[in-house]
Length: 484
Ligand code: ADP
Ligand code: GLC
Image 1 (cartoon, rainbow, N blue to C red):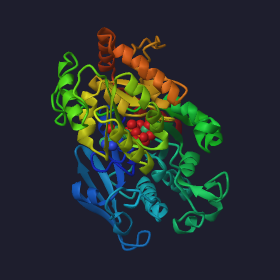
Image 2 (cartoon, rainbow, N blue to C red):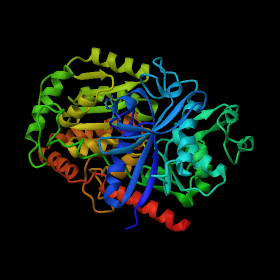
Image 3 (cartoon, rainbow, N blue to C red):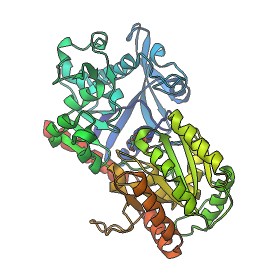
Image 4 (cartoon, rainbow, N blue to C red):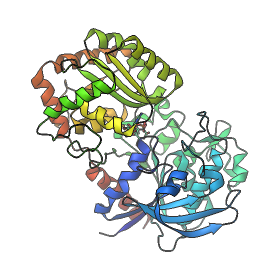
């Protein structure tokens, strides 16, 4: 097998910096690709956590003035990942979230911050680092969207490019004046290139100029070609449908392994789930819920945003109470949703428990102790928490969209590909339909055999990166063959 060299470009990479699933994917895929003969290095910004954690960092290039201040390109590694780090202190040496201020507002110079990242990606593509000249530059989300565009406009021999969409809702929109300060020609400002509703969009740049576009599930790949799902890019994606495909995400099954998980109270294997009850008891304590093995415990681990549909779950709380179920929610995001969930917990002590914040350890305990995991998203490119739930024996209750549709088999359905039922899916994405599936899940929970069967089928599902990394490797090889 010919080795393939790929430069991945990502704004967050687990376990170094993470705000969502993009980091999980960017952190796990390079390692899974090794078995497929793909040598992947990942370029990321030098945020403080990166500068602290990356070891063996060696300077391979420095600039006295990189987009307005001194900058360096470093090569280093962390936990099996080979990294390039763009260390530009005036752009990235800021504490906290990579995209927003402590007040939750986008950094005003995000356009320059992520243009700088893409510019160096394109330069590595052109051979800036002789020891690693990539065959392919693989850009993730809008933060890397300009990389394929720079490579295109540089008008030199270039590596092939892949753009992966993790979420159409984040489009990297900026004022047109930015064009002048990020080294792009003004003629790019037209509707067939970067112009987007009077401004420019970095996501559009990637979608226009990447040789291949992927997204993180086959169903989302279809949905985004519609006007509604495309969120402004439906037409563009229909026009490029011949190069667009969906490849499902996996999860890192060594990080998510109930048999060896250091974050859960009691470890267990797929063949013996009795310790789940002990984890459930600990979870009930932590969320101030009544201790009861009989009450089905519903878990949620999520960003609190419109996408995730958690306002619908608030509306379904009367059903949860009526059915004798409990709810434990871990999440952070929209202030309004945070407040409403906290109010629901205050109003229903012992029945609704809420933890506001981002807590990796608690997320593991929730997977190990919840009976069911709810993901009521309005749209969901792939979704990872339902995959973790399958691996931990928590039964997913999900809306029928995007990757949720592709990864969960509903209890009432014979799956076309012969897969066994693993959970509950509802449509349309409304509070009523959600409440209906909660009632169904409650009935199934009290039929021990049915519930065990769902859990066993989930535990037997392959949620690892093994096969999915193979799909990316095949895409890279196919793309190289097409250009040869
Ligand atoms: P998205 O990327 O849209 O947020 P995903 O389901 O793809 O959704 O990925 C979310 C990731 O972030 C999962 O690994 C999940 O466990 C984690 N996560 C989300 N919210 C929290 C939280 N409040 N605390 C800990 N982990 C969280
Ligand atoms: C995005 C999506 C989520 C997906 C993740 C990783 O944040 O919202 O569905 O799983 O990216 O691809």
